[in-house]
Image (cartoon, rainbow, N blue to C red; front, side):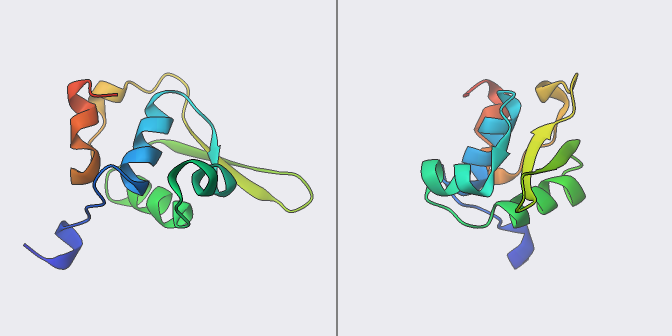
Length: 94
């Protein structure tokens, strides 16, 4: 197993981001800092989109052009591929 295959974070940042997205939430970096004590949301979103093919939409708001992320409307969470850190969510753990 390569280092990239071991993208684990327990129930922290990756798990939090996946859980929030499948619950239909719109999340930002500020939300992640407040709720998950994390600071790498952009990297997590990039990886979910590029490696796990999650249909995530980014919308930039406000004068500071802050990115807000959400799943594309109509996305079925049961059809998503989950990273190891959030694999329990695919089994209804949310």
